[in-house]
Length: 81
Image (cartoon, rainbow, N blue to C red; front, side, top):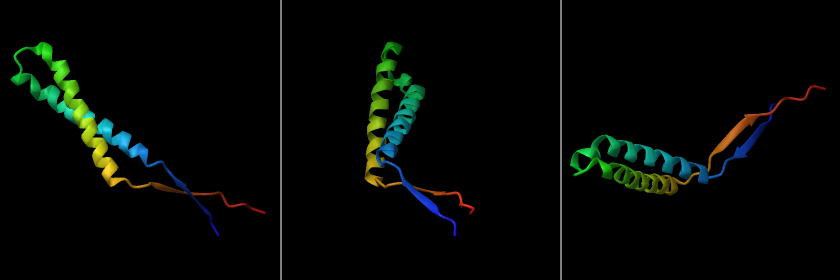
């Protein structure tokens, strides 16, 4: 009979992943569009970083709300003998 090894990963990893994805999406969208409404292009980096921060917060909260533990199943080698 084959054996399976169950490995549970930490639930915090998806929260960090969601924060990174949220920051990239909101910051990227702002970098493309926010320059149109600003008086000066010198303000653009601050606005992009602020929006990336909001995106990181929203992404982390969404992943925290989902909050599931990930389980990976790995097949172990069969001992011959």
